[in-house]
Amino acid sequence: MNRVADDLNAALHKLFEADPSAYLLGEDVADPYGGAFKITKGLTTRFPGRVRATPISEAGFTGVACGLALTGNTVIVEIMFADFLFLALDQIVNFAAKSVSMYGRRLPMRLIVRCPTGGRRGYGATHSQSPQKHLIGVPDLAIYELSPLHPAAAVFAEMTAAAIPCLFVEDKSLYGERLPAGDRLDDLFSFDRLGTHARAYADRSLPVDHLVLAPGGMLGRTLAAARRLLLDREENTQIVVPSRLYPLDLDPLLPLLTAAGRVSVVEESTAGGTWGEHVAARINAAVRLRHPVTLVSSADSIIPAAPQLEAQVVAGADTIYAALATGPLA
Amino acid sequence: MAHPAPPLVVARADLAALLFIRHFETALLELFAQGRVAGTTHTCLGQEYIPVALAPLLAGDHVFSNHRGHGHYLARYDDPAGLLAEIMGRAGGVCGGVGGSQHLWRPDYLSTGVQGQSVPVAAGVALHLQQSGRGQLAAAFVGDGTFGEGAVYEGLNLAALWRLPLVLFVENNGIAQSTPTDRQLAGTIAGRAAAFGIAYAGVDTDDVGEIRSAVGPLLAAVRDGGGPLIVEFRTRRLGPHSKGDDSRTPAELAALRSADWYARTRALDPVTFDEIDERQRARMAAVLADVANREPAGQWAGTQWAAA
Image (tube, rainbow over all chains, first blue to last red; front, side, top):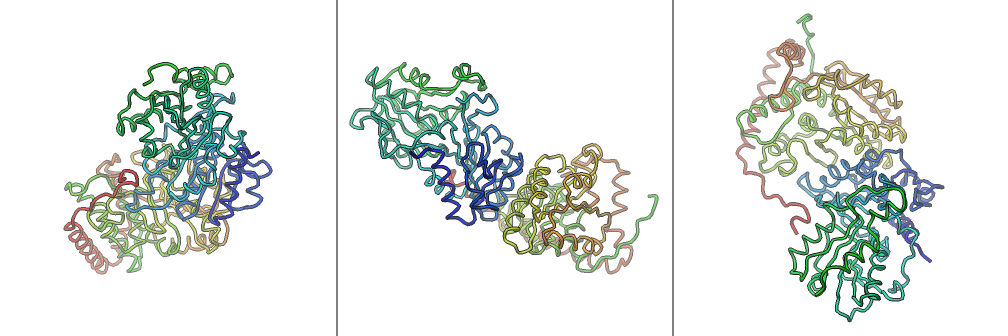
């Protein structure tokens, strides 16, 4: 069975085979260690010189990556935990993203910043953050999220073709999960595609009571909630999983949005200035919904370490179910 | 003045370059005073000899400049109208008026306005050049104030570990905006280079020929795989940080001016000097007349998504 981590690792190997200008920089990425989450396993052995383990210097090696991108190379940076991304933000926001346009011409910057995100591992406040919301709205900085329904090789190809800096957030709880074989997710749910979005559904012929937008890291939790809504309440849910969170391609979703009984956006980011708030504003500007968009996120809090405390903060299947099972349906 | 400053010999072409930058920067301050230029600017008055001395040594290399970068650009490219149009927001600017004074780009030249940011980026370019194996180097101009930024040390550490062809040219003018260097820099820049095992040279002269003779062989060692290099120029900033924001005393400024290359070069041969000086002053006047009459820079195309 192919796991998400294996798929990511294979996609990186494939990228390096195909692109002689590809570089990867990050802490502890060299063999035999192969990265804190083993995503870069085998790369330094096969591509020494182009895959480099760095000192603990996020600003430094992200800056080096910017210089490599500036001179026409394809560069992948691995930030060991997404919380450390903030150490490199000057290079990402002030240099990489601005350089695309601030010199009065479009400079291609093929830079992918990978970072493991999210809690539910008991790592505590500085190793569990979901930073997506902090990087929404940066001109020429795209945000992609790892999803079990989006093979990594295709997502890497899309990001490098865009030739702008891309943040690729990887919910670390996904690494050990299996990729679906075919279009079946489980005994009830299957998935298909709407543009570059994936859509999980139980029965496409039924009216949609709940349309839920959920990034890849939330898919499992949202599916669990959708199963309960179907079995306990006979409410039908479709889940849209975007690969690119920002800017979000809303067009393929417009017919679904207008037809759905209720629209929700779920995410693991803590409350306040969230991706969901941004998406809700986009939806409100595009279509007229029957009910306001329901937002589900983690609590407005740091992420505590003890599992029982963490569970009180981080949005889980129960949080999603509780939010969707209350309030109006059309 | 305790000791009269010694006269200074400069080759004709170099003197013309020095004087042109002097007149460009002086004209800019006048334009600001007249309200004819928006935004901000940072002139390199007093420091002109550094980029003029280094320009021929860096012909095929990648250069990173900073907020105080007009001299770096003018010494490298014969494009004063492009620079002035960029600063004045007129048609024909190097970056279409989008970048302005602090954000200039050419295929192997770039300036940014965030201190320290360029050091790791230049290290990345140096890694690219090292892998290309053509003996090119990446050079970044930084100031003494830049050494307060952590990114500098992360970049230097990586450059030393990977023996990258990276050169920092430090223009230590003794003041970071309004803060004297001895109040913002503990120890010395030489000491910081030594901590990383990075080659270091201090330059106290403003003699263009002497600088080339001293720095040229050091750059050759970098090109040959010797690893990074820091060259610290102890120099003088005659003008304000940007526009009229100079907190130094009149006595301090007078001492700086008496040591400046301008008067010392003129002392040797005033007739020849004045002739070249007048020619460069006239050239700057012609550039200004050209650019000031141009249309404003056209529509901003925006970013990819803003335009969509």
